[in-house]
Image 1: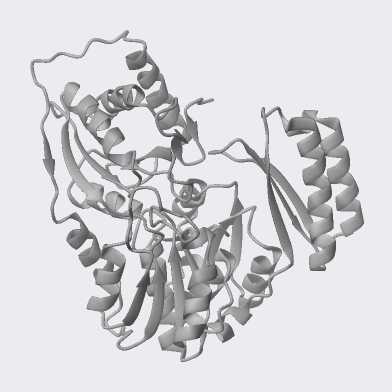
Image 2: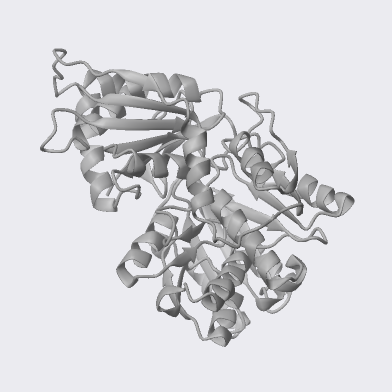
Length: 450
């Protein structure tokens, strides 16, 4: 089991273990060695980042480590995570590295990795890479300085990524003069998102596009849509589109200012892809966090539903194994395997807008394809993460709640893979009952583990 890697890469507070420059150098060395093909003298690595103040510090350290181990580096600058995945594959690089902590506050940062094909690493690959990182950290490996690698800036990274996104669109795609509002979270999409929507002819109003290194995700973006919701209603827009800090997820707002869940986006896209005959094997993949309403909606449409553990990587692995074209998470990660190898907020936004235009219905009507069960999610800070099955009081309260729900809801309790949190999710027949049950479980966890 890995100690550095969580659900989505390595993450922590900037300048504290494991997000220190010293550790970043070790990670860089390990990445250069781990991804070097046997038939090449050295590896080529692409690095992108979001707008956090610590991004430059960690980028310099990572790039230095890669070059010290003989690798070459392309610096893509500020670019969404899926942009790095695309560049890695299209430029035939050996790996891609993203410096970002996604939707976390600015003082956190992290490292996400993609292989040469643009896919996230498997658990087995992370374990092997982590072993190499630890060896470099301990100084047990000596890297020769005879063939130090070089680094260069990839000045057209944004343009390459935007061109790729446009190539994913159908010949009939049009959002000409469509009024939309986009929230770029002062993050990685702050340049490319306004550019691409304007180039496609939309009447786009862009919010939170002035990053200062510390305002990423601050009361904005996919986690904080209040300002976006108000602006959509005030401007009469057809939709609001909120991206997270690194641009790999989307949360949408309809023309009435109501927020859609990631599951509702999946249901809308599934219906559209089914109608266009591109929903491979009539199949959709999501995680255990998906609302019960998604399964019901898919059943009505005659679409098979496969369920995985938490994490877009697990969704993608199942999509590849089952030859599915669509999958995602309730949190807003949506994966279109017929176009891309990872979750992409911008691509999801374009697919959603195409559904609105093609079906000639407002988003408030399209979302009715799925009835959302009342759901409450509480994150409880914990000091340690023992096996939840071994904590008797927690198991007892979960059993009590499940008995009260009588099959009209469900309970899911799990640790966060990126933060010191235990996440409690309860779905039930009414909002009040659901919140009461969720709070009861959260209070018990807080008492025993907080």
